[in-house]
Length: 136
Image (cartoon, rainbow, N blue to C red; front, side, top):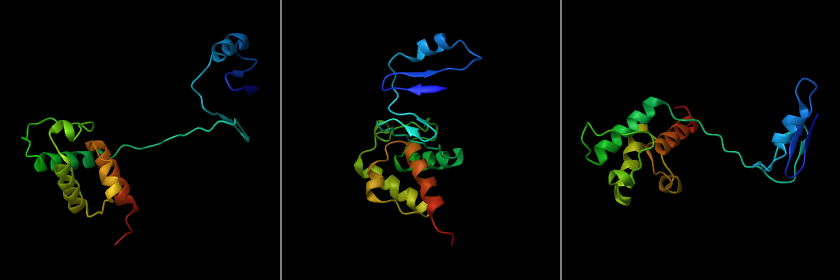
């Protein structure tokens, strides 16, 4: 059996010490909502699920960023590398996006392009756009 109130969540099962388990879960939590079957609390929960791009895509984006920013071949880039930390200004970012569009044969909307700040974000967007692209 499970019960839910706005600030506590408790479970009762014969196979565990319910008082100890409930005591831990009665403390205020960061849950905004939780759902059991057809029951859902009145507060809303926003979940964001994202999948990381393939390592090959991240590497291709890294190579393009190095080329566009004239970085040396031995410059270490990670998926979390921010364009601004690499010295890119807004024009550089536009040129990176244009190079990515050409390399992957995609079209990036301006609003999406403005939200790209890291190599990972660019790679994730590319994979999303490639997946949505109709087969030729």
